[in-house]
Image 1 (cartoon, rainbow over the protein chains, first blue to last red):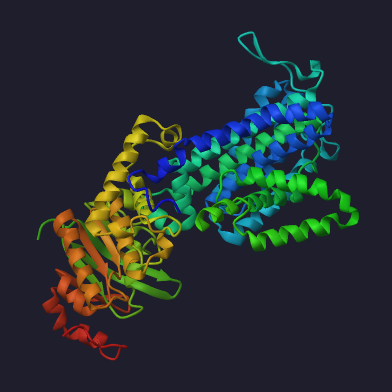
Image 2: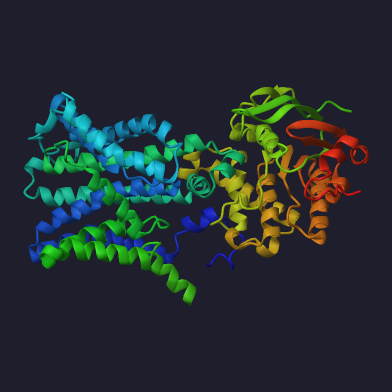
Length: 340
Length: 261
């Protein structure tokens, strides 16, 4: 509730101004992700953390997309479908057309965006639980399609996908051939972290630009948004396609890491998880899904010490969190502010 | 009468077997304040929705400045300059008053969404324009004390003014007000009557309103169109309407028969 004192700045600026505190926060975050984590792992020798953290980074890219659909007021439980589509697009392009992985990464995102426009045009007219139910089915549709199509090689999936090759521009090597690296895990982690940072930067810019304000207007009242001249149908599809783009990128990366993809690589549970990450982190905060992914993914792993009670404790904690903090973990920050 | 800015031509709306509007026609002159009255369920709201593009007429058409706007989606109708306001619940609840008004300036933006995303010069100029214009509107409607309040915390009277502010932000030529006096006491109504007059006098708007409050309607309107059971039964100045036997008949026996005579 700081708005009461400031009056001359536009709300657009409020989010984009780089206060010293914010700069320090962003700096600390980047330092942690790119320096401290690798240093910690090198010191402790816990190389398995790379796999976990890479997954967290990539899942949070997908969750960023889901969050954006929440931002236009739609509950999206279908991100798994786009992760699967993105994964297959990348795998097929690499294996059948011999395209470089680096080119397939954006292509997977673009393909998903294109698919989501076709799917989104009819289904985005639905609201609330109806939209949620249709998206819930999407993941299953994607899985069955992958099973049925010849190009996806059915249930056998696509395997032995080569590691990403060299990325060079004008003869200058930007990323070396992953197969030649002594430690491809670190390389994948850094790549995933870069993608995560880029994704959240884009998301933050969207939310704090006019596009985000229009998305909010859509979330709060679609009729009124239309009456002030917002092309609501177009904006909905635009937000949904950006969302799916993120899903596709995440899927393509997972495929590159596991070097394989099957129709069951992304299932309904994954779609539900993407949504839960957003809920847990906070739907009102751009960085909510990133924190949510981190907490949930690690929380699940940590709870493995509880053996057969793992799921019970996990779901109990989720329910408790939603009751106590319905606006997500990040809403704790706001609470402190209002108390002051 | 000068050339009409808005023409309603034989507008009919049927929902299955139910006829909400039947062959309604009237013209609206530029800078006129015209009220549409009628008992509950007479089809006033349906008529408004058809003018603003939220509902497409079954037959008939709405002509704005010589071209047809019926059948266009609401955002296109708004772009042409015909904008409706809603009853008080229709606002952006979790934005402040000022944010509500700024976001409603969407129609005036010259920069593209990509430009806004990248923070281009045109986008920044737009932002500055919107902020200035929003402050103008805030001053015009006397909303300064609540400019940074969350819209969801506002009392009814302010919400109505905010709805009007949102409508004004789109820079319309014709504004459709949906029951601007509903639920107001006498003083509030008089203030709103003055405000509506100022919309026309100071901002040059053409005002169309749907209203139940007969004393206010009689006071404010240049002309009145009365509909009942979906049909236009009378059209004229407040004086003509007050003495029209069909209007009196329509109102007699309805819950409150007073039509301000």
